[in-house]
Length: 392
Image (cartoon, rainbow, N blue to C red; front, side, top):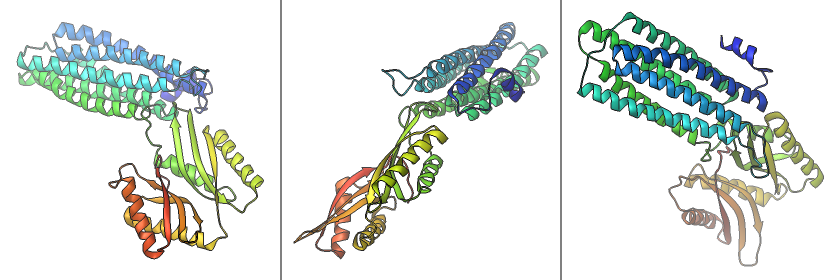
């Protein structure tokens, strides 16, 4: 059914890399959420009021907030689709992340309110009127919310949208919430013990737990989360596939919203090579990333001496030795400046953010290792921080 609806209402639905198509997915999913949640809110509110069930009434309010969440998502997709302007040259894509965060916060607010009302019901229990109409409405809600969870999960993965993934998780929570309410209503009727409040407490704790995870997931891209290892490896392998490329390092990926990523990277090529040919390769790398992945890539050329055996051997030796300090350490851009009394070995060392040693301690440890084998060598080290895992 999901695929049928997508084909019916989204033009050029297979072209998910297109920003207009992506926005259409987001808007359509939000409208579906508004309609479905409005239906559930009205039906549950009527049943909850007639049966005096705090859990059913709370579930109805939950569906009303879900409709509000869908409105927020709709607004987020609409604002995110606005083109770049002079004040926002990177576009407005992060509006989608903001809308996803608001949905996650709303989920946590619902969890708090449900916990309070359920606790009150535990402390002051009251009878809940049972009817098979109630069972029917709740069962229908479970079926509809299950479909909505699957629908939003599928569309969210198709367009890589944290907002829709959060909405899918919210629908999944609703399935668990309504399922718990249904079980409580049936068991309370047959065993004569009111479980309404206790079941509400359990559901509230689950919602708060999942809401916290969603807040973290939606905050990560706005706080500058490192790119996924799979993306880093794909970028690395693609760059290494170009003629003349010896290595790559210092990758940075900046996320300004889904489909709006900018990156920079250093590419090592032979210093003895033809400058025009190297420049042509770099141009090809930048253009191909834009055309193939929609990634705005800026490449910095690092010349590497390939004919100086002393430099090559020292680069390999130090690169292996620094891993004795910490296996995550790497070096690059090594060069040698010879002098009468001493020789400067100049290079950069990439240090992870959670390194136990200070930068000063790392420099001293490397210097001591080099001096032990080469007493006249002095290391001039620039400490780099890792912004993406770049295996070597």
